[in-house]
Every structure is written in C-alpha cells, then in structure tokens.
Length: 356
Image (cartoon, rainbow, N blue to C red):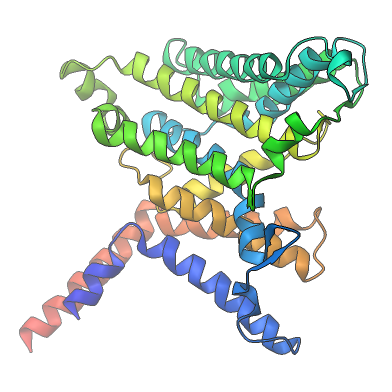
C-alpha cells in the first residue's frame, strides 16, 4: 500500500495515467466500430513513409510539444503563462514567407522567384520571434506587469503585424526545400525530428547547467533567490526569450506544413494547448518546480485527445470546449484547498490504521 501511495505521489503519475486513459478510450472506440482492438497502435509503411494514428499524433502534436518546452520554463519562473505564443508563431511564419517571397508577392515556386534564400527567411522568422519573447520578458521581469496582461499585447498585436507584413494576403512558398520542414525527411515526419532535437537540446542544457535550478529557485521565491545571488529579472527575461525562440521554431514548422503564411490561422488557439500540456504534465501553474518530461507527455496527450475528438465527429470549433473542461479539472485538482483536503484525509486514515 505504501509503495502504491508513493507511486501516486510521483509528478509523472497523472500525465502517464492521462495518456494511458486516452489510448484505452481509442481502443474501446475501435472495438465498438468493429475494428481490430489495437488498430490504434498500428504503424505501416506507405509510399516510403510511416503511417498510423500514433505517427499522426506525434507529427501533429510536434508544434504543441515545442511550445510546451518554452511554456514550462515561463510558468516555472514567473508563475504566469505566455498567451502570445500562437500569435508569435503567426508572426514568425509571416516574416519567414515575406522575406522569402518579397513584400507584395503572393506566391513563389522557383529559385529564380525568391527575393531571399529560404534559410535567410527562416532565420528572420525565428529572430523576430525571439525579439517578441524578449519584449514579453522585459514587461514581466523589469516592468513588473502581470504575465497574462503583458503577453496579451502580442497576443493581439503579433498576428496583426503578421497580416501587415503579408499585406493581408496568404503568401505561398511552393518549393520542396521549404516544404520539407513540415513534411517528411525519409520515412519519418520532419516535425517529429525537429521536436525531438528541441527536446534533446533543452534537456541537455537543463541537465548539464544550473539553469533549471535558477529557474525553479526564482519561481519558488524571487526575493530569496535574489538574496542568494540570483538575478531574478534576467532569469525571467531569459525564460520568455527561450519561449519566443520555441514559438518561432513551431511557427516555421506550421508554416512549412501548409507551405504558406496563412497568418489568420497559424498557431490559432495553440497557446491554450501549450498551457494545458504544462498543467497536464503535473507542473504547478503557480510556478516553482517543473518536469519537462511531464509537459512533453501532456502535449502529445492533448494532441491525442484532439485527434480522438475529430475522429468522433466533434468539429474544430467544439473541441476547445472539451479542452477547457480538462483545464478546469486540472486546476481544481491542483488548487491548495483540494490538495490540503486529500492530505488531511490521508493523514487521518494513517492515524486510524496505527490506532487499530
């Protein structure tokens, strides 16, 4: 019993159980529909590329996973969320395609038509996202503005700037060299590879440097960390800048996936998925300790939920309602009064057993 209690207290317990529950629901639906019981896990090779629902979830969930990396750091350091990441994705994608095609051009399909090299457009898109993240970080760290209020500025303005850059048009880059970032690299979807690289790099940085300790210290107690010699403002600024970097990468992946800068729709509502991924990963939205693995599991769980809802006929307009319900449940579970209630209940049971 003690071993079971210790397992349930692990930070990854809820994320793993949530993922398993979603998988079991899909298995149940397959049985009801008359398909093979484990058809959900089937992976096949068609035309030289991998196919299957698991592959599709990993592929489509890559942008959420990348955003969740930066969001995890932001939540831990500032006890707040960056609600502008979806709009920053749009801004990065718009800047990228505009630099490649040229201002006022709506479509390019050959090298001769390019205004600038593809790599230059990608770098510009990511750089503008980094600047957007630094702007958010400056408002939160140095101007002491509440994170949600500070990032609300770019939540509104970044997408408008993207529309302005693209002259209120969808800019297409119909070139395989650009499409590859959102399609396939060999048999594996490229977004999965990009997400894996981002996860590996950030995990290595957190493991082999003291950055993770600094972030958690600032998130737990800014004043105490400042007394200990940490520059709280710089650490918070760094977290928002990193969040902007990952939003830019996710924006390039999303833009390449549709080989165009559809600035009205790129990253739309993905900020909610990123926040939900962090919460579902067992990370407290009040800041402090964080678990990167939990956020990653949470991100792909969210995509699995989205894929399941769409497969069952729920429209894209209705899907956020179900996600909102999940967020409410997670926030309630993490609320201090609820935690205190279960803690007292557990202590009471232990006292009764000892008395017996």
